[in-house]
Length: 110
Image (cartoon, rainbow, N blue to C red; front, side):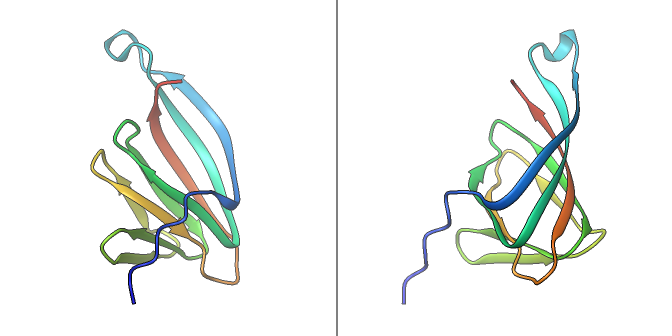
């Protein structure tokens, strides 16, 4: 049986921007963004790349499974974090019965 393609669309996901700040003249055009992201049970963040958007995700509640092509899967609970450097292409799923709430911090070029 072949490997299933990763999901490409977000589902059951709410991302609320809490704050952004400009990074100043040394990083002209870039901002640091803070978000609260909630995954409903069965929620998915579709396959995406962090090549242009490095980030950290810190799990506040629930259990989130991070997946990458090639079979990598890691489930994280409260206090767990994901480092999303430029070489990370992945997706995430809430496979549990409870909501997942996380704090995401990333560098963006709006």
